[in-house]
Length: 324
Image (cartoon, rainbow, N blue to C red):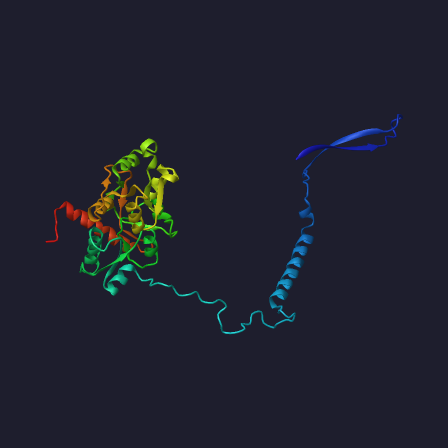
């Protein structure tokens, strides 16, 4: 409570000098005044306005839903015109979506993408068939090239690639010829880029020399390969020629269009021993190439199986196990 003074004026007839002022102390309770906002003052009007607007909106939505295209009104909001689906069904897949393991076992053989239908890589394919089917002879080697190998795997023409394929992060995430990512096994062999050809120019290529007697250096290299990426980064464009096939490369080497050929060194040794080419294989490995089996990323189970086949072969070799 607050003490206040109540002041009043009275006429005192006993005083001759006019009026006298008297004051009396009064003890009362006070309530402090608060500022009242617009919404608090007009809440009834605002509530009524919101209700009216909501009712108008409901009526408009109802009219839009039942309005027919010709301007009339329909008694029902939804009346299907026919029994046909509102959307055309999606086209069926163009390939068997069953797991790769199931497809192989039902088919009765393994299809491996290889660059040669004999030798080391076909033996790897035979190992896969021995595990999946129980018979190493149940294999089909499907010839692939540097240019189409990943496309053939992506199209499911082959079950896996065993064709000197280097494991790179780019190919695992988005391989450039298909736009898809692939799964790679543990490396079964570590190779590297090397050179074969005229001894003088092979030495020039290994030392990255392009002047004096090395000014005539001309390297043949396969397009869309890790070898091409290395040569392109190491030499100006007029020091190398891009080839699209082994036949084209051999022809260019024989007619002296190129005096050096770049590829995996293991493949170069094979070329020198089988083609009767008078050439020198360089002694230096210019890159490190972890070669691995390649499978589609969409089938993890099959990829794991192939990886364990590779591990089993490595372990068997370490333990001295042979076919017998």
